[in-house]
Amino acid sequence: MPNRDQTHPLGDEETDQINPMVADGLTPTQLEWLARQSSVVGRKKLQILRQALFEWLGEHLEYRFDEARFGDTVRRALEEFMKRHSEDVTTANADSRVERPHRDQ
Image (tube, rainbow, N blue to C red; front, top):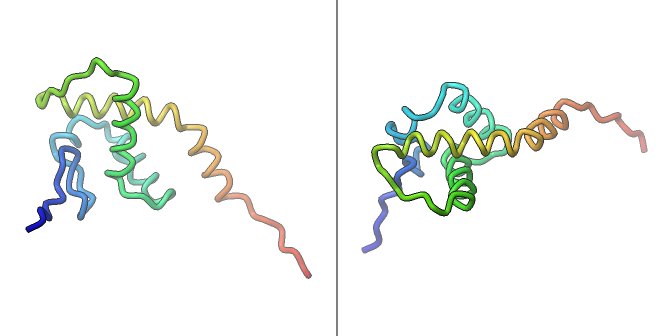
């Protein structure tokens, strides 16, 4: 019988709820940014958070999982992700505000 448990250390995939231990490590600004980005790019908050963590782990190969500090680790990963992708976000926001001229055919 397949395991249908969609919960992982970052949160619940099905409901897109961030694990409270992880959420407690994030700043209010990061939580707002995640919600906004989720809406803008059409991806779940957990997908964005997971991508941030994967990128951070790729740059910090020495990292060893520590449950007590996992929320802090995710906060640092998201902070770096936000900085690294701020230009992408700015471009996406600008593109969504630009009115394109109507062309008559």
